[in-house]
Image 1 (cartoon, rainbow, N blue to C red):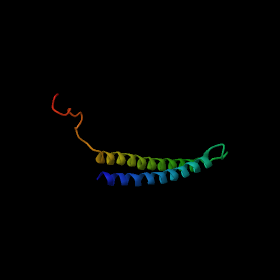
Image 2 (image 1 turned 135 degrees about the vertical axis):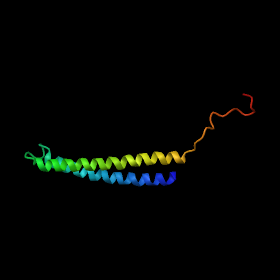
Image 3 (image 1 turned 60 degrees about the horizontal axis):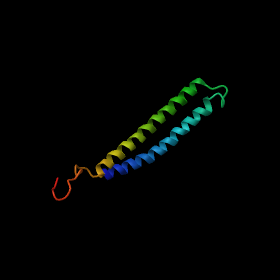
Image 4 (image 1 turned 90 degrees about the vertical axis):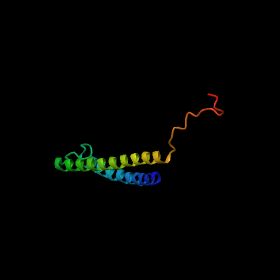
Length: 95
């Protein structure tokens, strides 16, 4: 179970990197069209649409990245040994 979760988290991490590029494209388009130093006469309606799209893509990227991190931690918790073997008593039963 833990190994499967780690594999899924790795796949989600790869997808998160793709989603980061996807978000970056929308953010750059917003900057190109709406920042005063790039466009002296920005269209407010277009800028609102571009900003909403960039925010949507950022949320999508964040969710995928968060899911990747959570699944990797859960997968590691399944794979790592658990128990209360420590602290062990010294050999010979003297204490």
